[in-house]
Image (cartoon, helix red, strand yellow):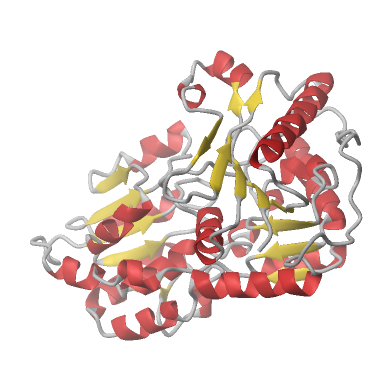
Length: 417
């Protein structure tokens, strides 16, 4: 397997997402492989404006002890993207920092994997043998983004779909929307390491609280464009003797957080490391997904679907993408009457369908997903020695010609560009 530059929307940290699972599987499978994982920028201008200096304390370039072939780069970004000239300088600086890291690692014609749509200008400028654009969310469909941000994301996304040799998507909706713009598109859903969750049911049986105070638990990103706050509050009021626990990275607005705290049995918990996820799930009586039903949530293939199935616990969800594909294993319901009703049915189930859920999860391993991707790479001719793919000179300037917008990750983090 060839070396890889992996440009991520997220950092390499203890809260594992698709990017970490894929990289970890490749590195375990191909011990001689090197991956340069490009995480979020160390944004000096943003820290100056907000007073948040936490991201500047970590090193900008380091190796991960657990994976000897993994190096992480958090590029330095000094200027705001809101000014066109500054944005061009930031793009040039990012390109140069990646080139320096690639040279220091001795990489030659690596594969370029782009998950961050803001990094479109890297394609063709890193001497790469191929470009993969991995689309995991349709950020253009987020209800809360401004028209200007939507236009910028559409521009970046269209450009990357055109440039990439392969566009990889995780859901049917993303496949349908990106296929007309892509030379090759492949659907590779998320997956799970089912063995990681093998003890969840037994651990849950040892919970002294039992079902006298049932816990309806959600594990995932807390964001108002995904979470239906009104539905969470309805659930809490329908089961005043129970608890509704929301656990994950918190991107809620202040007013959304205040609304949730009006109900005494709603609990907000911080994000937990991947190794702690099974223990958190063991404390849930019902795994819930109170998501909005909209074009954005329809574009997802939530990792929590596979995690919930792997732990065997009853699941109640609104009929959103992924969960709606398993009406035999998930209790589905929408609205202030349907969703609490689904939660009640799930609570009353016990462990009737636990075995079926676990077996379904086992059929969707990260190992199988990487098998699929590696076969795609083989078909593209990327697994052998240097390929004949066209690549631009390393002296070619980055294309940052789209006018006038400061690029922002729709989840609230500043993009690479």
